[in-house]
Length: 326
Image 1 (cartoon, rainbow, N blue to C red):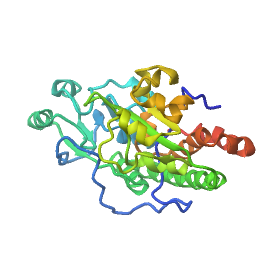
Image 2 (tube, one colour; image 1 turned 180 degrees about the vertical axis):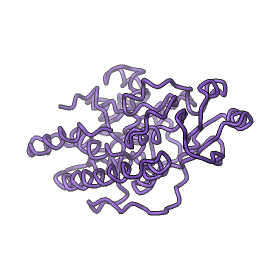
Image 3 (cartoon, one colour; image 1 turned 45 degrees about the vertical axis):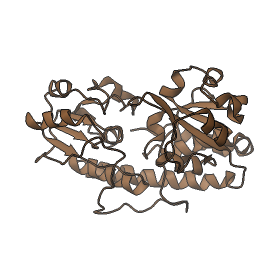
Image 4 (cartoon, rainbow, N blue to C red; image 1 turned 30 degrees about the vertical axis):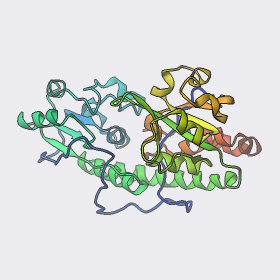
């Protein structure tokens, strides 16, 4: 059963609403990643070696999916999936790295999605001769499949990556088929709240994979497409969400749905009045992964509990998909 204050949500979705997974993009140029602090180019010449520092949460998770995690010696602080990765030491927040922290791990390569900083740290890593490998992430399911392939190829695990993608597609097709059961149900208005550590502010997610997973689960991200969505009373008054999803760091600053209504404007929304405020895992609502099928069912269970009550087979699929992991 889903408990309103402890929902963990997977972030992964397809770039089509047709109900079938797209083909893997072969030789597809990787898309621009989200907001890099510094423009980086690959300097690594050979294979990764056995002391890889990885700064990029999607890359880190995909390394586990292809079974190359033993080669990773450190991660960035936001890389939290799968849970086993928390046993790896952290080199800090991806936008506020310390050169000394990275250098102290004696890395064979620094692998990143380029969403890193500050620029001076990256220049220092170059000066001391640490090889840098850049893998760009994108904002579609095809981009994520391409990334899984690239990770598999780089770590010499192409077959493992292909097998993961094949299963991923099958599970995704089943989840999208299930979504037809709530396709005609009323769609709640949703706001997804993130706490930005770099800016020290609360803001609503307006784009990226989150929009699509909310949509496939039968909701509408009411802030989709807006420019700048720092949470203010005016923004909340305008949005009037029926449901608020809060990334765990944002939610933890309050600790409960009732306390979360202290955030400006929240108490005056339908979500605030009904305490329809749910904690979600940020890594599960930021990028696409093989956990996408479970993601859709988790959110759908929040958005459309009556549909789940009327269709017990959805709970069986939910339980099955809850066991999807590297």
